[in-house]
Length: 215
Image 1 (cartoon, one colour):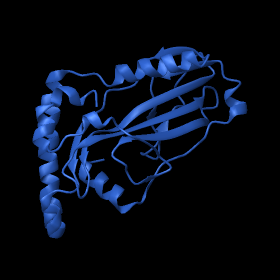
Image 2 (spheres, one colour):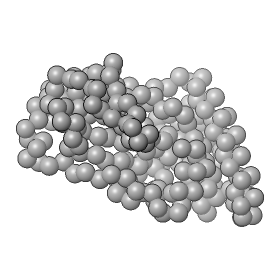
Image 3 (cartoon, helix red, strand yellow):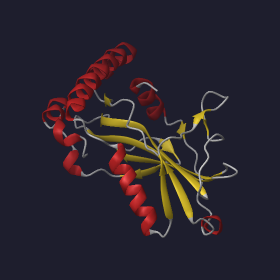
Image 4 (cartoon, helix red, strand yellow):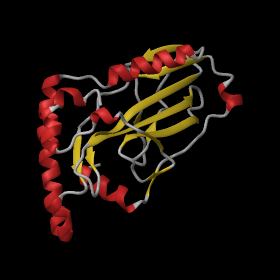
């Protein structure tokens, strides 16, 4: 989803995500978990929901949308030169956490969900693993956001985590985690970002681009 469209959706307060809590009795039976390879974010977004142009209604919003697009391209291009990996640290953290919890973990990089017939959801029916459950984690959104009534930019990250029964492909657990900017997403888990990665302007953000991947 484009940053402008997503921003409008979040501001409207109508976004909602699945919220499936893990059943303790069910998870107690799990011994082996296959973690699907986490993909690097497809794109990086920089958005300013409080830009001056927003004060001029629909036309101002359009102008601000163009500005956000330009900023996203500039930021992504410079960030690309840094060659950071967001997926590998996340994979390592997931694997370590599961192993510390007593699970036998295998990493599966050659399989992934396919697009379901509805054209919107994921279909795991073709994923075959030697494990009790499948853990699928992916970046839904990555970037930096300047919220309304603020000139500061802070991390803007959405990560989805889905645990499925390896045989039936039924959901055991499904959560959405939002890091940094507090989005209006019903059922999502909000996590604060380190204040160290808060920048006073887009120019300040670009001046510290080598640090932003850590943020």
